[in-house]
Image (tube, rainbow, N blue to C red):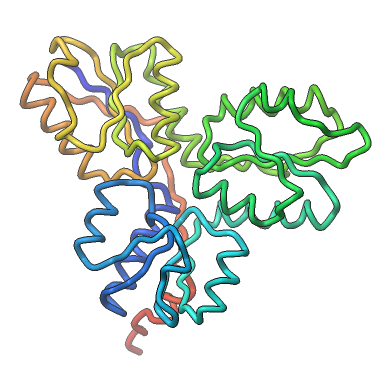
Length: 314
């Protein structure tokens, strides 16, 4: 077996910031520490923090009054922020800056009187937060059929936004249809799909012509991990979305294939290494890493934690 290891893969800057922020908050404040939604969509990371005393909740009303709560990387709606203030919660906001940018764009378009079309997946934490920025002015579309069902007029001011973790190709197909129906619609001056999502998709596409199967390390509730598996499937290549090496079934492989391995933006590298080790031990595989681009993006910790950073000695 030959393994083609795609790069970039794994943690993006937003996930790295959120995970580091939660680690830092535990160091400073200790447990229990509440997090609204999973800090990132990765089972192993969430389970590790649970064992350290972190309590993940999907209802802000369940956080005890006066407690300390961290917002996940996916962001929250203004209603959640209001509820947190009413409960006198001490908030640490670990929202990814790229998600926060979409919130800002939604608020700006709403203030300017636009009807907003949001391209995304219903019930995803990020989408729920964005929809809450301008309730009544945002319509969610998940498919071409949803675009065709829109009831907007040629006189409406129309703007579109996208969930940051979509497939680039999927989003472009829907946006193109939206523009055909409403040529006067406008979008964000820069693409909303995050750099890491695009880079991981491009890195995988670059190796698909050379492989027989794809292993994507990432959790089932990770949108960008699912998109990677879907990209492989769309090219007719078997794709396996797994949380880690324990999920690999050796019967998936003959043992002489070329297998691409990649990881979603919330999957830690140690899980990738565990998968490579298992495949190498089981099939005598050798690994070739292929890189499409380097990433040097860094997001600072939330302000609430930066203020707690130890001061350098003069």
